[in-house]
Image 1 (tube, rainbow, N blue to C red):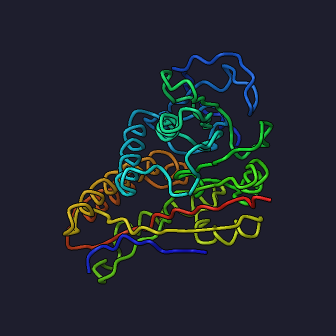
Image 2 (cartoon, rainbow, N blue to C red):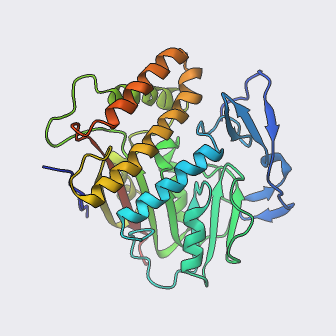
Image 3 (cartoon, rainbow, N blue to C red):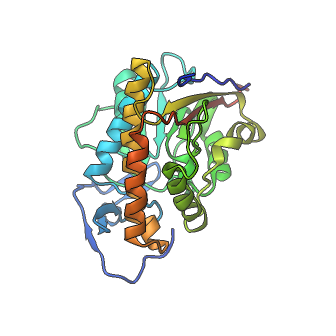
Amino acid sequence: MEEDGIIEPLGDEDVPERAREVTSDYDPAEEETTFGSLTSSVSGHVWEYGRRYHAFRYGRYPVPNDEEEYKRESLRHTMLKDLLGGKLYLAPIGNSPQKIIDLGTGFGEWAIEVGETFPSAKVTGVDLSPIQPHWIPPNVEFIVDDIEDEWVHERDYDFIHFRFVNTLLKDNTGLFRKVFQNLKPGGWVEVQDILPYVSSDDDTIPPNYPVIKFIAMFKPVLRNKYGFDINVLERLPSLLESLGFVNVERKVFHMPLGEWARDPHLRLLGGYFREILMDFFGAMAARPLVEAGYEKEEIGSVLRDVKAAVSNRRIHAYMPIHFVWAQKPAA
């Protein structure tokens, strides 16, 4: 069953031949993990286009993993908690989950806070980048791996979580099949992600709106160059049902793009979202668009137009953030 709980606004490609610098600020142990062996071969970073990227499976994920990206992810974490009234998820996982995994954990804030919320649970975060903090709760661990690879780890997870990951994956069908196999009977999966579509309820979006123009620039690049399933959220509930999940639910929040709302809470969320989106657009400009052949001058010009547009309070634009959760049958 789907439900629209809406916040209403007003009214592995090959490594290129070019030289690159690989560095590491991670001190991995030679340990066997549930996803494989974590060694120094996956602990480096690549500096390109003025930003830092993961070295493991180079080029698989074209979003930076540097300090600028940390600030964006941290602000996004704050925005989503504020959106949900302090909650970290919407799935009804109960009060005592014992095994939780966060796929595409990024800098690990969600996994750490969930570990603190459930100190008796084992919480695992998996990401391509070794960028998580060293000082973490004793029940939390982080693994460097590609979540679209074959899983070789233990099963029977109570809760499998994704946040802003699935639109930048190649094979969501295959991945959710693995999720189903690795959940315990009665376990839950939740996806939190954004559909890259701009709308308004009062027709204030002008023709040639720069935000729409910029999205139209990078979406084909992500789809055609990287093979990402950009619009997976549109079909995610039916996909989960086709794989055997039950109790499929969806809530869609219309996130204001900028501080145009009269309601103070929506205005705060819109301010968060404006900064998050501008930083994400900057990440798209740094590597994917340049590698796709766009001139830096053209990218810079559109970005300047975007910044002006999202600061215009007369334009009441929003984008949908989807929360989708589903359960593996109990028997």
